[in-house]
Each structure stands twice: as C-alpha cells, then as structure tokens.
Length: 429
Image (cartoon, rainbow, N blue to C red; front, side, top):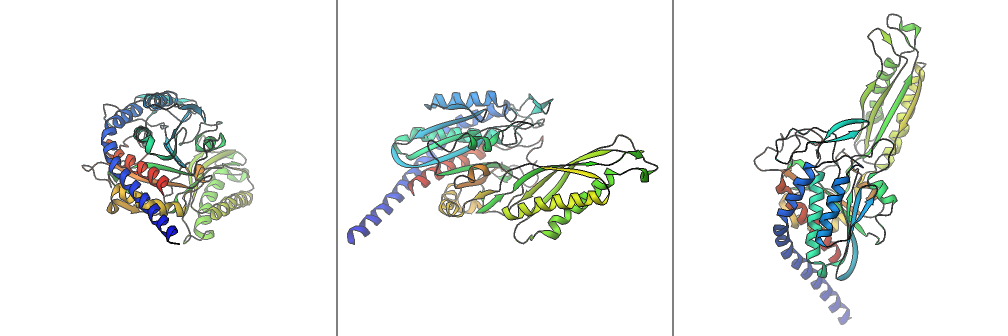
C-alpha cells in the first residue's frame, strides 16, 4: 500500500513539474516567434481568398511548415493543409485547428497590408477581405507549430495541425469546411483524442479571454421558402393569390415559433428572414416569390422542434391563403459544444495563460462555427481571445464581417500562449 501511495505522489509531482517547466518555456518561445507570426499574418491578410479558393493561402501555409521542418499534407478538403508532429515521448494526440478563408467584403481600414484582392462569389467578381480574423488564426497556429517543433523531443504526445478551408461556407453546389475534413478522415491516422480551437474577437480587449462550458455558439440552419400564388393586377387583388401578403403573414407567424412554442428559459433561439425576392412593379401582384432566412439554436432537441414547427406554421399559413409553398432547410452546423469534463480540465490552463482576472465566463453566442463538426467526433474546447488594442474603445469598434473590421497584431500572443498551454497541459495530465 505504501508503494502505491508513493507512486501516486511521484506521478502527481512529475505532472506539476512538467507543467511548470513548459510554462517557463512558453513565454520565451512566444517572444521569440512573435515577429514571424506578425509577418505571416500581414501576408495572409493582404492575400485574402474566399472559401474553397484558398489556393495561394494553402501554398504559403505549406511552404512555412516545410521551412520549419514538417512534411505537410495538402489538398485536404480541397484546399486544407494538415501537418503532424510526433513528440519525443509517448502520449495522447491533440488536434489544433485554424480556419483560413476570407469573406466577400471590401476593406476600408487603412493598413499597409490591407487586402486589394478580388474573387468570384456566386458568379460575380467581388472584393475579398479577412473580415473575421482568420488570418490571425492561421498565423497563430503556424507560430504554435514552430514553437512545438523547437521542443519536440520534450513533447509527450502527438500534435495534428489542421488548417481548415471554407469555415464561412462552401460555394453553392460544393462541399467544404470542417464537415468535409471530418468526412475525409482528418481526425484519424493518428486518431485525435481532443481538439482545440480559438477565435479572435474585435470587441474584446487584447489580453482578455472568453469561454464557457457546454454550448458556446449556436447551431445554424439556412432556409429558403418559395411561395407560388396567382398573378393579378394590383387594383384587383381578388383576381389573384397574393404571395406577398402570404409571405408577410408567414414572417409574423414564424416569430411565434420561438416566443410561444419554445421554453426559452432552457436556451435562446432565433428565426430571422433576411431577404425577400419577388415582384417588379407597384401595381402587379407577382405570381411567386422566395424568402431566405437563418435559424439559430443552442439545444439539440429544441432545434428539431423549431425546424418541425417552421414547416408546419409556414405550410398552414400558405394553405390559408390558397398559396403553394416549398420549404428547403439545409443541414447547417451543429452547436459548438465545449465538453464539460474537458472544459473543467483545461480552464485552469486558460486562466494561467491569460491571468485568472482576464478570463470571462460568457453566455452563449448565437453566431455559429463549423468547429462543431470536429466536436461531434471528439471532445473539443473552443474559446475567444481579444483583438481590440488598448487605445480603442472595444464597445465602439466595427464588428466582424464588416468593411471596418480590425484586430491588432498584439492579440495573437495570447492565442499562442493559450494553444501551447492547452496542448502541453492536456498531454501532461
């Protein structure tokens, strides 16, 4: 019995010693690597590319990984890149993910490295910008890959670096993103035991970190509702079947799905119609129209109920107006879900990386992330780091997906520290 107790004590002492040793190394490695990470970030930002079209981005990622010493795999899920580091000691396999795509947004921020790129989006040539910070995510992960390479003989396990395309959604008619990566087996060979991901946030001060257990970001579904009526002169609506009035009634009635059918004390939900297309003149009742919308949920059962009720309410409303209706709802993204035991295990690491006073436990966010497809397969932890510099008011800065979006280079240090800490602490524990 005494031998067993001694072994347990020695194992605990060894774990603490390893963690402390890595802590002392991480800050030195971050300071040494930061300049490279900033340079990489500026290149990726200036050369932003759209989802599934990240050709030059993936070439640059692979080039940097090769220069470090890796043998990256390219063409994963079309334009993704994967690299594996096998540590010098046995241990678990940790997945680290960064998204790499930009958005069809025209940049207005005056930067020496501002994007002037153009790309094809839904058949049109559009400006392209990293309007959500994926350039920083890519650079942070490359920095982590470089730092871990320098201490690879001491790493107690294996790290799989996943540079994922098309987080913002694949072009129409194409597959892409995390779902396609999972389908192609990115979490296998070697099999990933846990995966970590982050997102920089423009409205959060540099040095701050935000996280929560369980659902941190919503599931998302896109929908299209086609309504067919009967065309008539606007002066004689009784001669036709009005799809415009039908659409208005459906929009109003859909709001009751959330407000009257869902138990909102359990989890929030949102149904939004963002576009209506139909009609050409003020005095013509059109024959048909279509609406586009988004659905956000944070509970799996509630999600199923809402999707069912949308179909029921929209169909019955159309029937009451003698209109025909067709409803299409995509598979969407699942809830971005931080598995509780992994969250509890790694929260002290995040608090150590940022300082306990800088870690905020937040409420769920109704934005969505396809990192959730990885979390459906293995335990995963997703969190936010600050990108707003001290001289700016974080409550007044531009939001994500806008032309004035900006996050500061200095925010990437916490990203590197936290991802290094999570990797090494998970392996050590």
